[in-house]
Length: 260
Image (cartoon, rainbow, N blue to C red; front, side, top):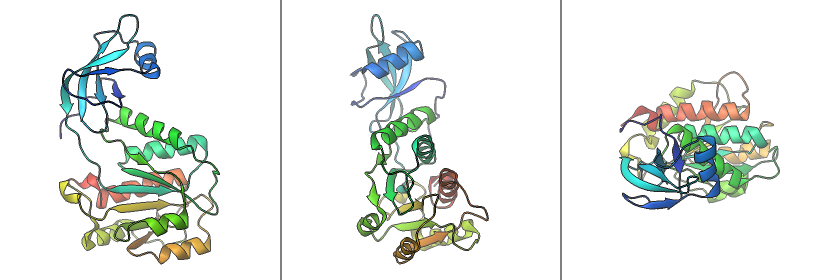
């Protein structure tokens, strides 16, 4: 793949990007470039919008940055594997961390679900979206993950496509080799690696609340078609730690870490 430029600042802009196009900066973007990064007119950054790839851009403005002129494309747009991270929301900073790490691990969609023991009673999806963009800016990611509105667990299960593989990370499951379990799922046709993943059913990775699933919730989950119940080892993890562990396993065996 084209090399990623980690030295130039990256900025997400919600505007079409093409050579010689001009993009107006909002107040927060202007403040970030001018006052935080201390960049002036003529300085170059990288801009992306999640649709048109990554572009070299030059800052415009007299007293402070107020726009960008798009110069040339640095990287073409890519696509993420069809991987949805499904989770019981946490509170404040730990939710921010979880969202950022899920994006870094390659999740294409974030789906909050409400369970009996979910800690957070309200979910700020706008804040989640801001964390998605920030993680993408910092980590060289071109695609912006979708953030779905929260759903009750049973409603989410009712509406999800039956053909998708549901990886149910359950602290009550017997501890077996998770890599072997995922390899068996791959052999059954659930591999999402490489450019041919389009059209395949997709994968959902479910992490529950720190209080665990209620027994009726676990029973409902185990009745789902195409479910893989997975233990994440002999220790109980915090939910944000479990997110990183589960997504790393899935991306290694079924996702885009293994190449094509």
